Amino acid sequence: MCKLPGLGLFGPGGKLTSLSAGVLRPAADPADPRTIAARARFFGADTIDPQTGALHTDRVVLSWVGCTTFALAIGGSVFLLDAWVPRLTSTGYVPATPQDLVDLAPAAIFIGHGHFDHAADAGRIAQASGAVVHGTAEHCASIAAQVADPAFPTAVHGDAGTAIGTREDFAVGAVEVSVVRHLHSARTPSDPVGGSPRFFPRPQPGIVLTHPPTLSGLLQGVPRLRDPEGGVLLYQFRVPGLCLVWHDSTGPLTERAPQVFDTLAALPATDVQIGAVQGYNQISNGLRDPRTYIEALTPALFVPSHHDNWLPGLTASAATYDAPLRAELERISAPRRPELRTLHDPADYVRPQRLTFQL
Image 1 (cartoon, rainbow, N blue to C red):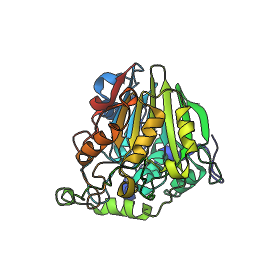
Image 2: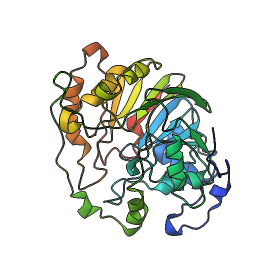
Image 3: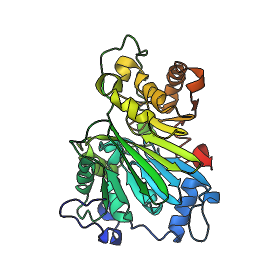
Image 4: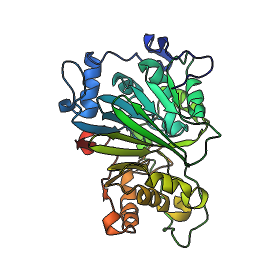
């Protein structure tokens, strides 16, 4: 863990009291009724102690919060995977708020990359909850700049000079973690050997009429539109009985960084992979890139993300990815082909029953 220049490692970020101007109420003690209620909603009432708010360690539970943001209960801790609640062009389509994520009292926030649709709420959530922000040096600096008093701890994993394919191992509480530097999605020329049919669903803007954006959502979101990528990280989380991989973008490793495949293949055996499937290379190579990550990691179960209508007007519902994704998985030999568990919006938002894994 390291701190940013000029910032205290721990500070008074959890002492906020005003809710004006987008300021979030500070995180409560796990035994506070607000935290107990939030954890019961996001992880299931049978996953927590109703008196103390402590998490049972006999299962791993995830709740989807739109795009690639998930709340994760693992090893007795709450983690956030990315930190953005979609609400730029719609409000209320995802039944969650940044305050809900603060109320979970997360111990850590893991950032895959710094674009607005992944990290735009990270600063406010970290400031109010005291959660440790994990990311590259660029992520941590950008997130600190989101708030006026960035007195929250950070754990830096690499910087602009870190080689693609670099792996780092560490622990957060009872959870072992590996982080791998990889690539953001990008368009490459059509691959005549490994490529797949071009695919990009027609945008579905209708949600804007039933869930119109609000002024507060725009004021919080628009300033984050230019936030830089800051590098891209893939994380593997391990507790006895389950190994989970999560990544919020899926790059063209075939052309630009094939060495990353070896790094992914060398990770401990993956049980569950949650991976972004929407990306710029759909235009040229369909869902080839998500398949190549799956082939390298060989998970038993694959769960798609970054495939919902997270930005109505430009995106479409997750169901439009079902057919091409199933066809793409058919290209993997049967012994190595994972089970597919789809997530559909909005029915599967904040639905812990969909991603509960008994240990």
